Length: 594
Image 1 (tube, helix red, strand yellow):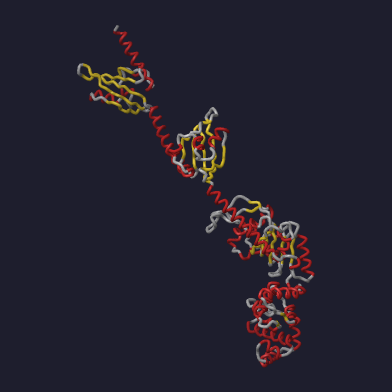
Image 2: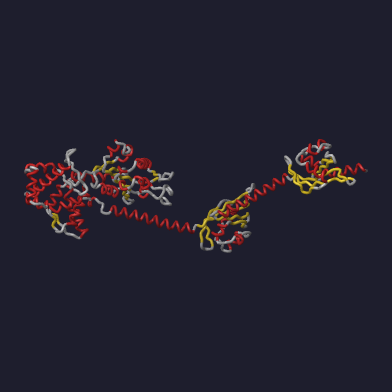
């Protein structure tokens, strides 16, 4: 009967979930149950009758402390190499003496792991809550039935609600109450796919919403996550942008109209065969969408020929953008031509800026003074001519542009190519159809009609009725006009403005011509190395010779030059000027500028 009782006790102790270890007064293990075997992975027969610290060096010390002091330990946390235990340790007392100690313990390693995971999940939840609430876009999370589980602070702001007012409620109720006109969540549950729509919130705001389903391993929708963004402000900004763009297009169109105003064959004043040939060439090349290079001195009319080509091309209704390459600083020419992205450089506009190429899209870009652009800009211009693509400064994406390029220069591009100042490959791309416009002095037949054209124009502008004398007209027709048509227009305008009488005499020309040319002193007739004294004497000699030849006598020449006749007489003797010398100098066609 006693054996049966011992057997029952042993069976019971081995069946409980807790581990049990007992030691005697010498610290030798006297009991080691099945749970202890499992926790420590040590068979009982290997542990029995052995010193506790030999078997459990990390966790057995507390049993010896209890044995020594008789003090029990409750909820003691013991850390082994592979396990963590919670242990209750009690002394065993026999006949009033401590005869051993027993430990009841439980392995909490798994519980500790779960606890750490729970802490991690708590931290992750806090992080996610922070991230969700810091989002500028609104977030709604609903379950598979459309019930609201969570909304963030942005959604509260956008929808004008508090989280506690909607959490736990179904979207069908909220739609029925007029919170929104329709629900993207319900559409996602119905269509079982992502849905994007525009919602009207309380009849005031318009928001862009996108609902995405979250599915489980069975493919069933468990949650619907909705992103919403207030587009009322975006709509306002879009409207303003469209207005600005329309206004900009209107300005470009108006500028093009102003540029092209009066540009017609009838409005181009010419009589010479050279200009007739040039205009015929311009009209022939206009319908052909090819690059044109206009060559010639400053002021010969390259701009009017470029406008004529544009007007008679298929792009005639598109923009005509003229760019004075010489007037743009080298540091800015690339950004002005090709535009720049936001933040491309210090001082750049925040929104970026389109360049002249983009402004001229579907039209014509006239690059005046093409010889002035930098080599880096030449490279990008070459790329456009080959690929019809540009890349803004600070950008990476190429943009296709439909623009016809007409270039013009008063420089010798071929010499610039030889001196490496201009890319050879770009020169050949531009020089597809070259048109050389000769200077006004080489087509003198055009001077007279231009004189009458500008006289009529400035009389009308300034409400005058000035008339040029035959002598004045003859003098102008013989003048070389190194500034070409621009200089002729300037002289006529000055004559109309500054002369007192309606009848403009030849003597009135001197002040007008001197005013136009006051900054130019090209002594092309001087030999290299001549002294200033000799140069002044030579110049004075030629002036006197021309004056005598023009006015026919010393008296009239002195009157025109506003000096005494005696001064003219002395100068003639000093410079040994004879009638023969006067005739010789007239034949040289030398131009005096003072």
